[in-house]
Length: 475
Image 1: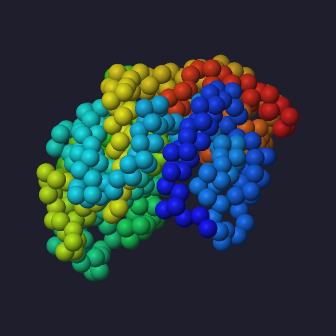
Image 2: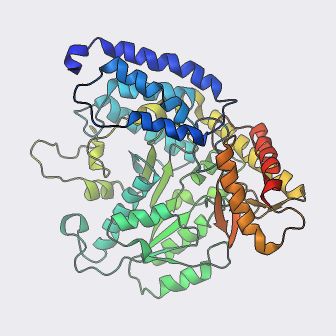
Image 3: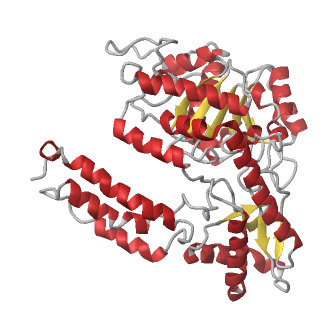
């Protein structure tokens, strides 16, 4: 029988095995395909019945290392353009290992003053990076989706107060449907958050002026005026996933102020536009929002799981998530902060440490340079596409997304969607680069997104070469 109490001396040896694997693995990323579908079969080696007698620490780690580095999708490399996923900077990766080593519970201050105080520091640094006023409070979350849950839960608390109800204490019974108004850019993660909160994923009303989903500002204002002063939630989208477009956040803030509405901004990756003067105008007005969400494991390039939620009214966070009434838990203390009273998690990983490390290591200048480099890569690809006879650029390049489709001369319009769908599957099966398809303005398209710190123009050039190699065999 293997018992960890009897194997205490094996921890250092097990970590050494991982360290020995890390160097060659990281060195291989420059030339390694993003994924080889044939390696999926390797994962079955980890299956079978639950062992009666454990194999022991070293044997278990060796078994995992024999499979995982080969079977993984190598999204931390520079050729993964599929799901708006960054890599992990060297500083963030090292700090994430430290996070596992220390295994802090960052929920309660008494559980880890280190994690609590570092979280406060990084939230201040992030506000500084994005140009947000210091009055914003915030909390780190596992993802942008949980950041939406946080921000929209606070918005729901504010909205219910407008109807004379403390929804955190008494629930939604007797309340009307919470009005949530947005453009066609509203992301599924926003709808999922509303689903989790009991407000309904399909309750969002969208106001669009074209087939891309751009906001019809006049129609939005008419809908607000028809509410006769009843509170409502506006969702502005800063970085639409198909083409990188943005809602007019400043104008939405004007409407929120005029009609007494709450403005929630989804800045999953687009909030990083504020980090560079070259793109900052796209984020104009975000500082006027009531709640803002973003994702750390996208353009911040820290490991999963990492998101953050900023709330302008400090008191509402504690009102929404605190006051547990448990004798063994402290009351909320603004100096000795227990972050489990400011967000949906109770026990929490100390995810502030990788964020602190990457911001300390590369600073404002490093992230400005990264944003500008990735925008330049997207523009570089956009230029190739726009000048080519076999490609069609479908939207202007604004941020880190290039939206286009493969359109060889002579292929009828009616066959292009199926051709691009086949191409998307072929690219993933090939594995040298990774990009899938989406539907944009009714068309099946490619939308590579460049947010990994390793990405350069050479990676975009490789994508073009792979498409031109695979494409002719598909029609």
